[in-house]
Image 1: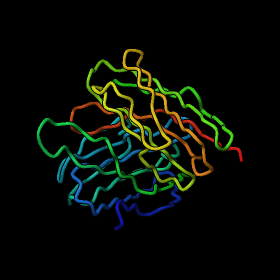
Image 2 (image 1 turned 90 degrees about the vertical axis):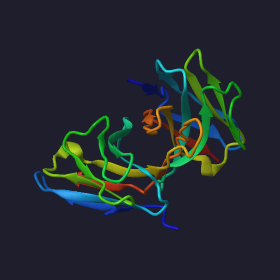
Image 3 (image 1 turned 90 degrees about the horizontal axis):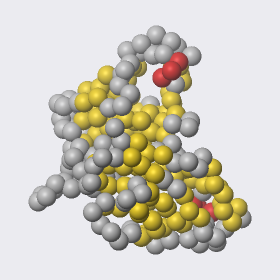
Length: 119
Length: 115
């Protein structure tokens, strides 16, 4: 059972180059998220999706785009990489409340992270 | 906007001893969830414990327990009988009961276990 898989795990880019990070989950989760982790700043939400074909901005969306064409995949794109985007990127997924009074579980299932360096 | 503050960037504890990690948060909501996540050197994020704000009883999971003080907006994690495998970054996180499960994380506390 793979869970949440991110590719690539490591990447070095030059300023201005573009790239796409792929997140795939095999748990049939509805919700997917992209976070970035920087020293001393914890994890900050970039974009998220509450279902196939939907995306929304998080706390730090500038310079990133996302797409959720298939339920199991959530892509994070950098159109023109900048050194400020050097970070470790985490994808996560979760499932909505099943029935009755809506209460989130809050348990996110994370990938192993992708370290991106922009020179 | 909600904020989560972890004022201890680093902590250390002797193996088998008890340590408490602090977390405070700011919200105007009355219904929400709080979490502690662990990130070992492997980078994998793992849920340690969850607290529902409407429950007065503090959550416990084996050696891990929380002290939830809703009025003070405080949520500390106590690790009893510390083990070498507990060495990690610990993140406190907040989630409002809005259904989209957007978590806000604190900046983390790096816990070192001294053999």
